[in-house]
Image (cartoon, rainbow over all chains, first blue to last red; front, side, top):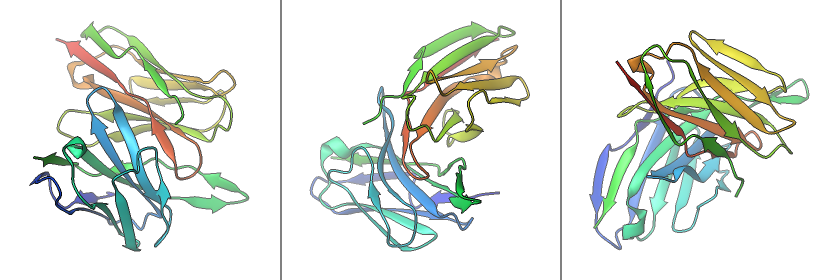
Length: 119
Length: 111
């Protein structure tokens, strides 16, 4: 079974702190994603990465950065946490395989989530 | 930001009822559509990956259809059971990486 793990289920940080959220997947997936989930707003993509050291902004990248030094690990960084970053953060991964001249689309596998509270 | 809309926002049905909900998405630049089930206190899990216009997928009592020309997908649940209670999310895949999720339809099935 695919396994996506996140470093913490619950995290409480103070405003201005630097926060690291870690995500690890064990299925050699090329793609990794960070989302946040807020009531009434669904899942919103913060950043994604399709290869080591590669990253692309999602829909709400402001206030966040990411790091992917190894294929299995994708970190989300809040340089200076603010109260409006209190949220549920979900990591996901998926295969990305381009074969026979056409990309194959694979579903995403999600981690358990980290509920971050910034006070 | 792409607009992926799901309706209704929530649904309450009795056990045994059949139900369906809608995901609408931009019809241009279609790449793939995913359906996920998200149960409380668990991670979202993929139900279907749909890529071709006219696709119909089925898993047990749950099925989905896809119309890429008009930009919608339907999810059907036949004979709903309490264990079907969850939030059902659709995700529009713009390319092999970027995805935009709808807000979800929350289904509650009463015994």
